[in-house]
Image (cartoon, rainbow, N blue to C red; front, top):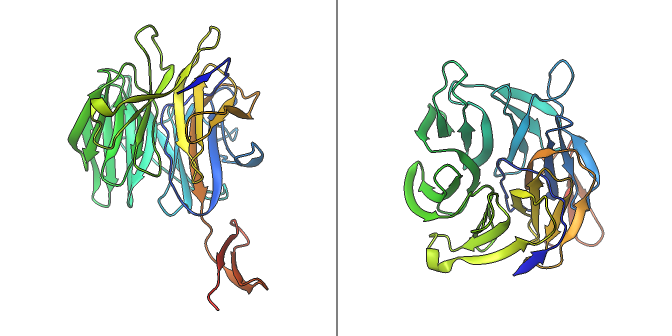
Length: 318
C-alpha cells in the first residue's frame, strides 16, 4: 500500500480509463480556468478543447470520455447541460443536448452507447433528479441513483459510484448485478486485469482520501487499500482516477493543483502536472488516428498517418 505525502491533486466528477493502442492522452478539465485540455503523460500540453461559446470557455467543465476506438473525445459542461464532441486531436465537431442530460458529472462509453451520470439540482425545468442514462440509437434509457459520481466501463459491467448512499455498483446494461458499501465514493477506474478501483473516505475522513481495489464482482472480501493520503491538511478529496495502457495510475483531488502518477503497484508518486487552477475532471485515454496515407519504413514498419491526427505505427509482415 502506498502512502502519499503532501500531494496537491486535481478534482474529478467522472473519469474513464480506456486501454487502447494509440497515443496516451490525459484530458484535464479546469474549473477555475473553465477549460479542458489534453496533455501527454509527461505533462506537455497537446491541445485545448475549445467549445463554440462566446468566450471559448465552458460554464463548468466536468467529465470527459474517449470513444472505444479512441477517435473521439466527448466532454461535459455541468452548467449548461451540454456534451461536446471533439476529434482525438482536439478539433471541435459538434454538441449534444437532451432532456435526460442534467448537470452531467460522468461520461463513459459502452460499445457505441454513451453513458452519462447526472447530478441535477432540481432547478432545471424538465429534468428529473439524479440519474444514470445510456444513450442508444433509440434514445436514452435512464434510472435514478442517489448522487451518482464516477463511472467506468469494464469487460462485463458498467461501474458507477453513488456517494449519496455510499455504494459502488456494477451494472449489465442498466440492471444492477453487484454492489458494495464504501464511504463517500467518487472516481472509478479499471485496470487491464479487470480490477476495479474507487476513491473513498476512511472511517475518520469526510472526503475520499484513499483508493480501494476490488475484484470485478465487487466482493467485499476482495477489497484492498491500494493507496492512502497522509499529508498535511487541507486534505484533498480524491475525485479522479485513470489508467494508461502501460499500467500507470493517475489521480486527482478537489481543491488541489497537481496531477500525480503512481506505478501499477501504487508506489513511486510522481507529479505529472503542477500549478493547475482547480480542475474538475480528468480522463486517461488514448487517441487513435484515422489512417490517411501509407509509408513503408526500412525496418519493416508501416506508418499510418493523417494530416489531422496522430501517427500510429504497426510492424509490417514481410
